[in-house]
Length: 556
Image (cartoon, rainbow, N blue to C red):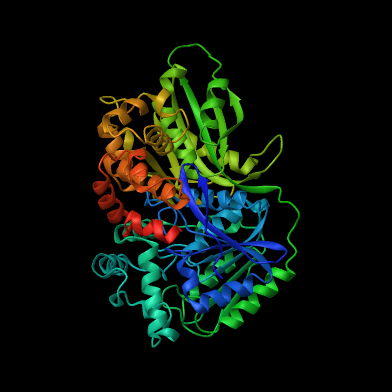
């Protein structure tokens, strides 16, 4: 029996989730590429697998933002935002700690979550996971640019059809028309062609190799020997870099864990979940470190600590070292850290100073008077030495975790780590929103009131939901940003224009009201800013593929 679909908020985004099972511990399943938690229950093989997991754990399913039943108002999402979605769902169901089970792409974000939030992770399980999705000499099993282009062409021309070569994901099911039809429907219902394209291009840039050695939780990695989507060498590579990881290689060539020798996979998972004994607490976790040098315009030594603490707190940051000429802050994710840094440069005049900022990611003490180790401090200071005023310089490790963040990068230089002597590639980062900034400076007091442009935009649209005259001009005025900048920023972070985003938010809120059965369709149209009910129905069907009246009948 399919569980009830519920929603929780991750920032302003609605995340769909389901909970089932009677086991004593929690297990969060992080699906691959795209998903639809309702359509999962239309596949008998997957249902059998999930129900078996439900005998040993309380199982939590969810669709990441931009896919499945979750809000489609955004199509781009960073690994960091996907971690936020996992935490939001865990918080919604009262789960303090959980086993993370990530499939394929879901294994990448699960690994990053385990390194960043070890004290919320009982253990890590991954099936068919990869560390990066683009060929390089140090990772020769990933697809080449030409091979990735073939995937882009397939999505462009054949999304959700038999021409997608879906049989390669489950060769053992290639002659099962019911299964293959379900799989095509599952992908189509999980993402639109444009969303699938954006997600695929974004995933091409992901690279978690450098954070693998920061994973300290008990880890089980599984893969089939002849999987053509993710090569067996990738699983071995990842296992070698995670301390104490167990790697299990199964016969077969299916990339989907619920096809082929599923019973063997289930038994391995059950044994691992029931027998693992993780530490009660971890003293360290992965943090993004922001180090800044302050260059006053005059000779004064103004105390800006309060201002900096409030500013960084908007992005979830914490000042851990401060004096008049420098400070260090830690963040739980690189996207928030880098956006805070670029925005801080733009507002540095409020400090009567210029800033030079360096950003790196390293394990730090979770709670303690001195969270940054001597090694980490030496690295960020070495980066800062090479950084000029009005620059944000990041390491390549940070860059690899910023796919989908709306940032651009320029190669800067290579330095050597003071302790290990290993080379460290540095890049200069630029927020695309800051282009032509001197000619078009945003109102930062308004822009940063909640620490996120997208969050402020969504909140402002919500505040004017019933106002049919609300448009881009009012939105720009309230956010404190020009239309040109808003266009650029939203396109890079949501793949939508401001007008498209406004309409999409209105329609998603309308869908929520229809499902709740609180009002009739005409009333809902007016409440969400549509003065013409027939136009509302037309837009609604285009957005969701179903008319409002059909959805009403489904919700009864």
